[in-house]
Image 1: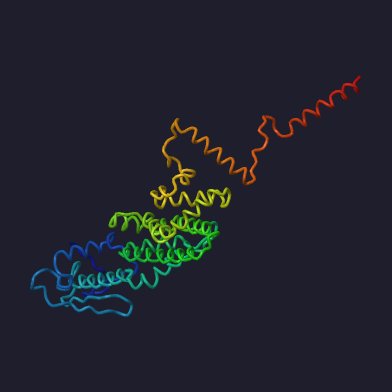
Image 2 (image 1 turned 135 degrees about the vertical axis):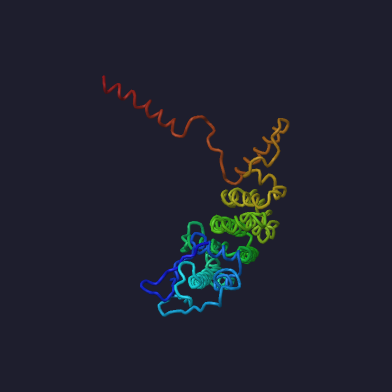
Length: 352
């Protein structure tokens, strides 16, 4: 392996210098990386570089003297050594050590993660979990995405995943306690708000942690981040409230427009997404918003279907909803026809 050194211009004292490249961080692309790997494979770095050529007769260790201007000099006592001399090798060894220390300065320690990176993620997650639909959130998605990427590259994926799950679990436990304190007339609406707010937050949280999901959760845990976060809502909120929520939904169904149709649809579809087997608790309710819940209709039950429709119409009429005029004429048609018929003879007489 050839090694190049910088010879002093106009000097004959055999001293060689090498400047420390302050911007050299790409080890794989530069010559220093290949130089380091080749020498490390042959022998220990110190013995190989400071003693010169291989063998016990290479001579004593070479002193290295730093100068005030940042130049590292290795002096060859034998005079002019030429290219590849022991002095140049010594300077290269120290230069590699300096580059190694600068490379290690870019490492994110666990203390750096906890004091700098996770607080940024924690604050952003808080805002995403508590935002209302349509609200503007003053956070930098690029900055959060970059934090996640750096932490994954520095092998902090496991800690970051644990912190994320703990953070969202604590939030959902607070949501569950607030729902338990809600009065019955507000229970359905507040559950709908909590469900919609959480599902909306996942649309931002999951993409921000895509690197952690791809390189840790999917590869090492064989799971998916979105599935894990939906499971958290199921366990900490929905399961605790389903037996209080379902009777209220059935009662609201029997009273038309007690709650808005959109609220009922959101809750029913959300419960089906969280746990499809909850359909068995109220198949008729779920079938109104989710297709193919009930078995296919059969001809022998047509009379029963007609009776159910008639019952619904009677209930609507009892609550003040009228069927209106069942004739084929549209409202106002008779008035228009009578107006034209009465005005026609008058026009004829005036012409005559």
